Image (cartoon, rainbow, N blue to C red; front, side, top):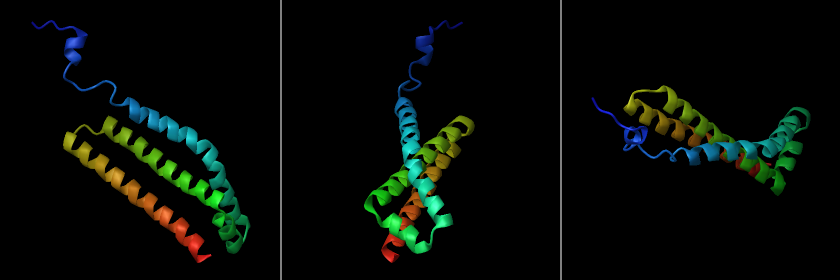
Length: 126
C-alpha cells in the first residue's frame, strides 16, 4: 500500500497556477466587450437604418474605427479562449486535444484577420 499526502500526489502534475492567466484574460476580455459592444450595436443600427455611404462615413471616423477594431480583436480572442477551455475540458485524447486547440486558434485568428481586412477595405473604398 502506498500512503501519500495530497501534496505528494499532486507533485509532478504541472503547475496549479498555469491556468490563472488564461482565466484572467477571459475575464478581462469579457469586461472589455461590455463598453466596446456599444460601437458594434451602433454599427448594426446604422447598417439597418442608414445608407451605405452614411455607414462608411461613420466608420471612417478614427474613434469609431478604433472602437470596431478593438471590439473585433476582443471578441475573437475571447471566443478563442472559450472554445479552448471547452476543448481542454471535453476532449480526452491528448493528441486530438492539441490538434483541436491549434486548429481553433488558427481558425479564430484567420477569421478575425479577415474581419479586420473587411473593416479597412470598407473604409478605404468609401
